Length: 210
Image (cartoon, rainbow, N blue to C red; front, side, top):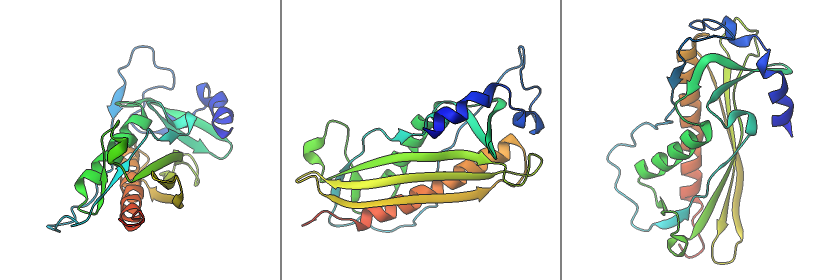
């Protein structure tokens, strides 16, 4: 798997040392700065809720192993590294799952997430597999990286387990600067872009008879 290949050189890679605000690649006692991404979408305005809704069950998302924890993954060609002295406030897979839930809650469309354990109230199951969640230094280590978020989604009917839709969503956002704060903002923007497409697609993939 790709994730296993990426993890090996992380302890010795020097990408993070070039980021402004990073004191050292191997700090002895310096505090770690915590960050979060929320993937908040622009307000849809005062649109009225859909008159006919359908329930969507959201299991835990799959997440590429190298990016699933609380460290911020960077890619430089065949090499990978985690940003020094910076962590997500919670594992990235947890923050992403929460962002998906907020995106559906804030959207007035017909697709409504049902609580876990509410299988009987769901018409569809939405399965997500986050395959890329990284900062790509495609223009060299001194240039702002491009954030890549790629998600594979499938919608399955609960009644007969038929696959109603299967689609990949990908958004790339260039960070404004090669600083951790700017990189985190780009992660947030890329996540919001993917979630906007995902929610819209789910709303348009209504179950048969829904």
